[in-house]
Length: 164
Image 1 (cartoon, rainbow, N blue to C red):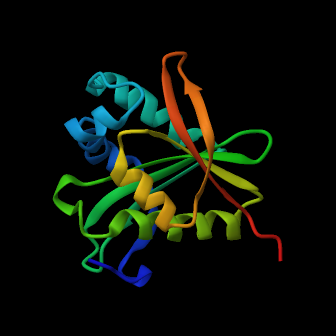
Image 2: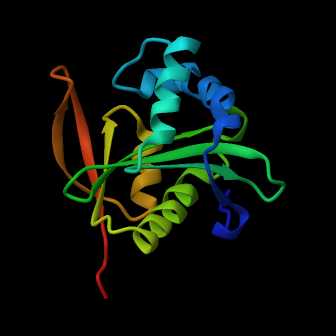
Image 3: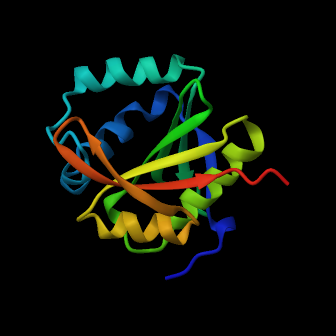
């Protein structure tokens, strides 16, 4: 299914999103796609979440469908070189509907338009074909293989800000 971007809206993550984000991050498919596959405890998540809300270099969004229902999340962690690393997940009930590539595209456009970020990096497990396709469809290009956490090899995709 192909959805136009206007079917998705972004809003900043807030304190009320803690539980839904915890549920999404502990989804078995999300855990298996992660470079750290253990389940995350509620206590661990709350501590991490509160820290993320306080960081000025973290851009964290909830994606809403045209009925204002949360369907996923996307987060950009920006380093001192103005490069971001992206993390995305879609609610299990909403997968396979074309949301991921649209969410990536919409949020990347937003980040480039409203920040000084120069590039966005996506590190994807080689067996995660759904993510690879979503990032390619959103305009990311493959640039190589990177070692993550000293034990995983990830496909490295990048989107670069067009300075017109």
